[in-house]
Length: 579
Image 1 (cartoon, one colour):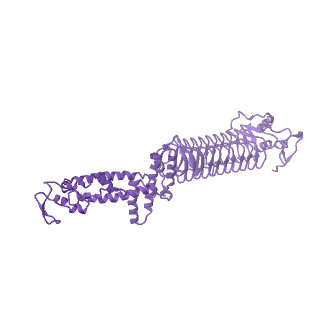
Image 2 (image 1 turned 135 degrees about the horizontal axis):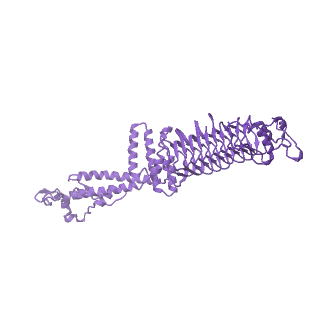
């Protein structure tokens, strides 16, 4: 129909589109149409019957859709609607209400009506559309422009509601509505511009597609039931929400996809049941949530929770609401803090352990552990941050060993990683090296003190070892030995059962020789940078009982001391940490 306009008398706005039908073209009017004409100028809802939605065709309530279109487009002189628009409730509307490309400057109110055919408002320009409580087999309203909103509250729709690329100055409200389709999405609003998109308590079989939409306020599906036999139940990819996304207490069978979206407020999934086993249940990869992400109050995610590359202000969750093992993706996800949620290393490591990189063709993701440690540090949980990084090092090194194809190299890495694990916690606890040094120091004290009591030490001086005071202490007093120095026989100095070392200490000539101290000797042996003077004067004697053990431990502790010292330096400098 051509949409030119002709001027009307009385200085009133032009209501008459060229080519529109006259009222006489609809005569004889149906009883309901007569009633509507009689009450056009009242500005109140014109109730047919009791105003409730008719369940079957009732001649007393039947209205032809072309007749309603005639009125909505302005009617004619003497038969024009009130400034509030055409308002009818309880009608049985026959034929197709076709307002494609039309301009309707008043409200359209067809509440609690039954439509035999899907209304068409494709590319129309309207004020507001009310279809609350009505029943119709779909709505075709692509590229609709409305000064206000579109209201389908409590409506029963057996077909697709399509408002793709529409621009609404108000809300799209589907609270309590039931929309069913056998294929495709029940509510399609791709690229829509709207203030609020509300589907609270709605039942949508076929799902919602609002990808690319721009919302000045909220996307609210609290308490809604959304099912999709084709996989994606809610497609909100690349959506721009200046308010919050609310799925509180919603039940969704199928994937909730919010990839690369922007949510300036919160995303609330408290109490929601999101089910898509074996596939993505909730995907918010690369999505920016500037507020909080809520996953609590017995919420369930039966499928994968994909948060890859997401950026979230704060996380509010309960451990009981986390997805099961293998159904969590957190790689490159960034967040600021945990609020009213588990904030300890044990709980959050269990959270991270629900990732299985192998399922996605990877061996390990270090970033989730680095991110968690960073958040812990910012929240003042330094010990928890360190615990997370230690686990990260262990898993990352295990993945590196698994990638090594050469078995010799793999064995070398295993040995090296084992040493770094027990001595430095992979460089995350360099002070642990000092604990090992203290332990080896104490062990050395025990070994060397026992050897000294057994007489298994001797002076570490060639001069002393050749001196008569030492050589004769190795003989009993009943024995004699010819001294090399003077070629004269001399008797031994040791009493019965006395060790050579004990005898030597009793000699006046040994009074100036430094005393053996097992504490300082162990420290002197262990730390290569120290010189306590003990090693220079004493050495284990392998010819005496316990001497071989003391000598072997002497060499072992010297090597350990060098190794632990170097590891401590490397640990403090960060050289052994994984990049």
